[in-house]
Length: 239
Image 1 (tube, one colour):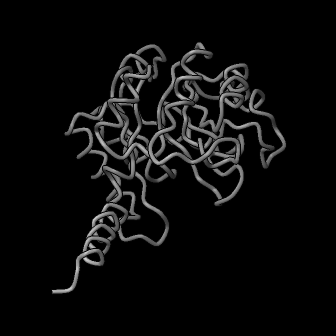
Image 2: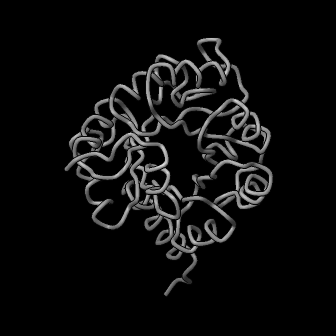
């Protein structure tokens, strides 16, 4: 397969109204292997995914080479604070790995390299012709990221930065705020666990929806079922 050209309008047109599938596995998990994530991405594309979101340089390289849809790349480094593509060096590496869209922390929190988001975006664009997606946690994040020059706004960090409560499903109130206030496309990501929730996000004005856990993380999916069975069994009266 061949990757789509790095034409910004073309990438956005491909993603518009479609499903982005996040293919990620956490360190130490059985599926944590670039070859496995590439196979996961191919399966998602076969099911109609408009784009793939991938974490880690090796995963990005493998997936870009294998699929014929845009790849949203990121590099997680750490677990707390700003850890999604946290520095300019991380962003440059993600772009060099072939990602069509570089996803990075789009909050207003201090970045580990001391650069602000606007400087990071500007310097990234000096080196690479890529789109930039800001993973935001609030409307103020989204407005600041828009001013910083990004191309896409994500709701990825809603409920994880202390500015908004963590909703059971996607934060549709934040989606409404961002769609009404921001001029950039809004990607709804985070706790989209059912097709109905994905459809609701689109109905609230999302440009596209990104789903990860509910499609590509069997460990979590299994716990949903085992927890439900355990709860049901505990609720049954004794025979």
